[in-house]
Amino acid sequence: MMGERETPPLKKAPHFVLIHGLSGGSWCWYKLKSMMYNSGYMVTCIDLKGAGIDPSDPNTILSFDHYNKPLLDFFSSLPPHHDHKVILVGHSAGGLSLTQASHKFPDKISVAVYVAATMLRNGFLTEQDVKDGVPDLSEYGDAYDLEFGLGSTQPPTAATVKKELQRKVIYHMSPPEDYTLASMLLRPGPVYAIQSAQFPEGNEGVEKVPRVYIKTMYDRVIKPEQQDNMITKWPPSQVYTLESDHSPNFSSPFALFGLLVKIAASIGGT
Image 1 (cartoon, rainbow, N blue to C red):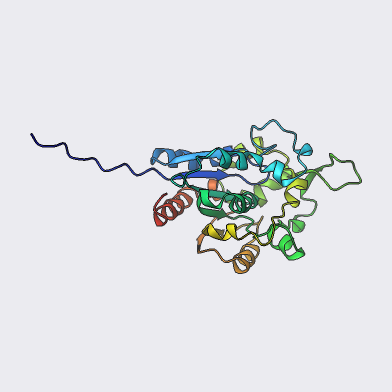
Image 2 (cartoon, helix red, strand yellow):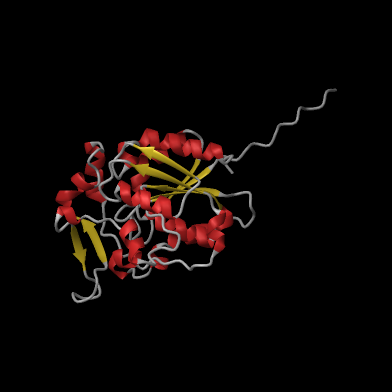
């Protein structure tokens, strides 16, 4: 009797973990998640503290560790062995979450992908870091609705881009239905916590994680020159470009998906 042919072990599908930007939530990724899921990938979308459907009041989130805790908890819950690494993708301020996770869990990330994102090795340590990584919307005048959870004489604790500017600044190339969805779901983002993001110098673990940057050419939030400055200062292994606004998850989802699949293939989809 012929022996049964051995079936080669199935290769695990790449696992994407998607992190939203300020004021967003896991809902921002609905197009990408559905494309990834339909293509057989594992996908996890996380709401950071005070974002999406997380019930926390953003005015009570006063440290970056608190804000980023849902992502750090996710990594803590992953199996300790090396056969489950994730492809970590962050949009806009979500880049800070990627960097902190890379400092703390370098062995659980196969690649960190920054999409129109703040990519600063140590967070906001210098004035130049702030200039490169924080949106400057001053050309639009008084662009934010601010909330002062610590009192009117203290720095703001939460902020949202004003409703009348959201289309023009964040979603000017996005379909009207996606802009409409966003305008209904955006929440005040915990800016006090985000501006406190600082990661220790001297931690070499962060350099173990390969980084890829996806530039957005028509970005009015994190402008192309800011993206270039961050890329020059902390060069990633690869840079890709999308002809999109600040929200390629809405305005260029197929192109963004194509790049993420390419990145997954290039690392062997661990």
